[in-house]
Length: 380
Image (cartoon, rainbow, N blue to C red; front, side):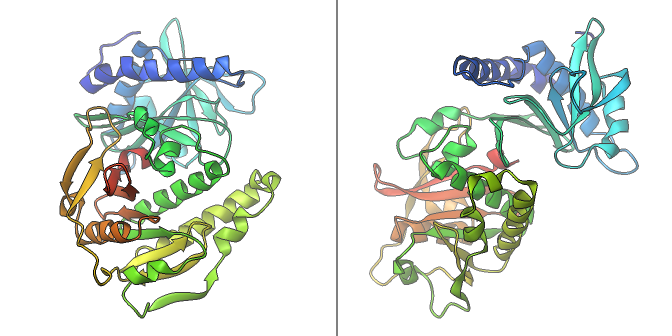
C-alpha cells in the first residue's frame, strides 16, 4: 500500500479490527453461511481509516462529508453502479463524491489492485460481515458490519473520534445478566423470538438518540399495572386504550417483514413513537410494544428506599464495570430511571441525553442493585 498513514489512531486499531473480522467471518464460514465478505487486512483497514478521517475534516459546498465505505470486490454481474475508471481512495476523491452518496444505505465500494486501494462504484447491497466505515461527522468514524440479512442488522466494532478510540468488547455479552438489547447490539443472537424484538428496540433507541432532545423510555411487563406505583398520578398523557401501532406491525407474518413496504411502515412508526420521548417526562411502553403513556413523571413509592449506588458498565475494551453513586450516571432523567428500575425490577429503562449519551438500566440480581450500560458507541 502506498502513502504513509498520518492519522495515528488508524494504525492503533487496525490489527484488532482485522482480528475481529477474521474471527467472525471464519466462524460464519465454518457454519456454512454464504455471501460472506473478504477479511480485510490490517494494512488495508489502516489506509481506509486514514483516507476517511482526512476527508471528514474537509467541506464540499459548505458541508462536511457523510459517507459509508464498504470493502469488497466489484462483481461484473451485480446491479451495482460501477465506474468506468478506477478512482484512487484519497481524501480529495471522497470529498468530491460525498454529495452524491450521503443518503443512508448507499456505499462506496472499495477494493485494491497493484496500484493500491481504489473506489470502484456505489452499491445498495453488501455481503454479510462486510467491513463498513461510516463517516458520521468531522473526525467521527464508525467501523461496523452487517451481521446477516434483515432490517437494521449492523454491529459496531470500533468508534474513532479524533484521538479517542473505543473498541467494542463483545465479551460483555457472555455475562448471564447482560440485557438482551445489549447482546443483540454486540452482534450475538438473543434467545427465541426476542431476536427480532430486540432489533426493533434497537431501532427505537437510535431514533430516540437522533432527535437530540433527550428522553426516557420505560419498558414494563404486560398484564400488570404495578408500575403505576412508581408514576406520579394522574398521568396527564395516559393512552386508553393502549396504542397498538407497533404491536400490530410485529404480529405480521415473517414473509411480510421482508417487504420494503413493511419496513417503511415500521420505520415511520418507530420515529413517530420515539418522538414522544422528547416530551418532558417518561414514555411508557409494554414489552409487547403497546404504548401506555408519555410525559409521565417518575416518583418513588411510599416505603421504597432511594437508589444510592448502581453497577455501571461501558462495553468497550478497558471499560471495567464499577460501582458508582446513582447520580454519577447522568442528570435528573438518569437518576429517576435508575429509581424506577430499583422499584420495578422486572422493567427496563432507556435514557437518551441531549449530548448524545445513551444508557440502559436493568436490575442485576447477582449484585442486588441496578445496573447501567452506557451504549451510545453501539448506536452510532
